[in-house]
Image (cartoon, rainbow, N blue to C red; front, top):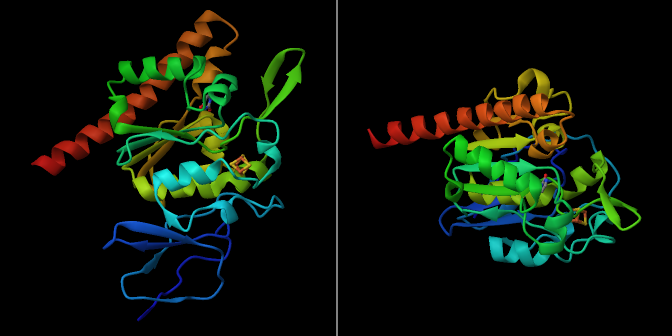
Length: 269
Ligand code: URA
Ligand code: SF4
């Protein structure tokens, strides 16, 4: 038997991550404030610094599967009632991509099209992101695409469903899904797309305009940064600004590509 030493503080969004490298599986324990005793192979790890203050949505923790794995998570997220967003959305949209991705791209929430088809980044913003990835020479097959919030938040205007920004409480409620994804993937690089994702991961004081494209070590990955959301590029008021914002997005993605390449060549030399 092994007593796991708790290194995280109690603002851990109610999560403890127990990792069993030997079995290559993860278990996310429901919130337990005391160090736990567990059988030999399990050790408690704390990979994650909370960026959000405690708020009152019930949260997704209770809907997580006991043993972490992508198939179990994908199934479980469809039953999540961790906040009210499940009520009006068609379905939850979980992340997709390489399960051992070297780079994770985190958006805000699924859009109208993503909500209907059930896959992330398939609408106009996703298409622009794909083009930008191509220009930055990042092969999408080494990436994983996800969002901080898994259900579409919108307002109905006639027949149209207009995107609404998720609130802090919804972002916080949904965080256990994102933490689980990152925990399973353990990427080298994380790039947050837009302010919602940036502030969820990097803290509420994070300013995209000031710090975009600067990579920092973070509890979630050795290199974490943020850039413009592709939807913001699409919403630019005129052609010139759109072009400028697109170049910024490609520039920050190119920074991520440079890290991936540097690490690849140092690993092979
Ligand atoms: N915008 C996002 O942030 N995520 C998606 O999946 C689609 C659009
Ligand atoms: Fe659960 Fe997240 Fe959907 Fe809220 S948005 S119901 S926390 S999956």
